[in-house]
Amino acid sequence: MLALLWVGLFSAPSAIAQDLKIAVIDPNRIVEESPQYEEARQTLSTEVAEREADLLDQQESLDRLNEKLDRDGALMSEEELKRLQNDIRARKRRLRYAKAELQEDFALRQSELRTKLVKQVEEVVRRIAKEQDIDLIVSEGVVYFSERIDISADVVERLKEEFRSR
Image (cartoon, rainbow, N blue to C red; front, side):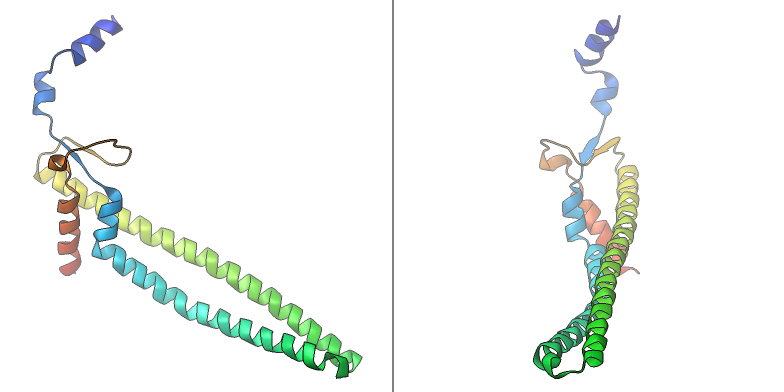
């Protein structure tokens, strides 16, 4: 019975299959060409730049203290030497923690911006599908598709229009 159904569905084109309108999108192209992606990248870069500069300052300060320890350590009293070594260890810990925190914050923010962009792209794709009466839009995992059914350019153009109209 199942074999007959299978043969019946795929042996001859049905009326439904003949009227089916299918399109393909290239999600990587859409993301890379959208102004929203560039804006998100710039936003993230700006947000991270100040914190990276602070980390660089902390590292330079730590380097100076290490140089002082190497240069003057033999001349320092036991108490001064111990205080400097403790200060260096504490600064190293804080710097390691600050770097890890920046990486976590960066990953989280990147994920937030990516999620926002994905939602925008999905909404635009849905609207285009409705406007053009497309029954199925295929995205990732496609082995081959003809340029005739690729609507990626339409999606990118719509994203650009929405970006400009903000």
